[in-house]
Amino acid sequence: MDETIKSEREKRRIQRKRKRQTRSIVTFMILFIMATVGVVSAQTQGYEVFYRGESLGYVQTSGVFQSAVDRIEKNVMECYNYDNIHLGDGFELIPSRIENPMDFDTCIQVLNSKNIPLYVSGADIFMDGQKIGTVTSLDKAQAVIAAYQSVNNKNQSELECVEVMVPLSETKDFAAMLSALKGRTK
Image 1 (cartoon, one colour):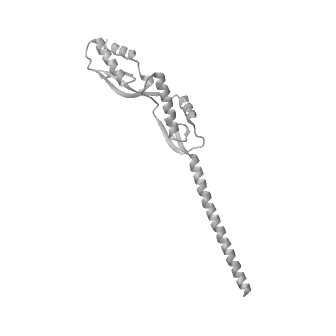
Image 2 (cartoon, rainbow, N blue to C red):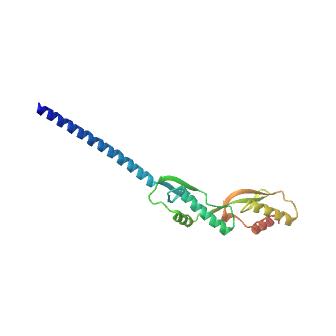
């Protein structure tokens, strides 16, 4: 009987050992999977920056991209002395996994190197329904119209201005617009 009891005890000990091993392996695998998923998702979440379909690179957060755009716009506004300049239209941030994200300075360098056009909240000036040109703001358009009316000593009701978002390169300065209006009436 001693032999039976010993063998029964040995079987139970082996079963307990197997249960402990199985529990340990399952616990280790769960912890390993959770750690892997956490590390991978924490390190690879970010945004891919596109400009009109072309990938410019990756940023860790949308704030890095927006800060770079704001800095460029601020520098351009100071240079041109306008407060309504915007960098391009057509940017898109798409959430993606990233490997080598751009920092703030690198993002500025990439945006500057792409020759992205500058846009301005300007105004088109129309005479008799025909577009004469575009200036850099609605206030400047109204000033051009007022100057033209005072020079010609008549009230031109056929002049109007419409606010638009246009590339800065398509705008004219005050003198050029006044000359275009004068040339149109001759």
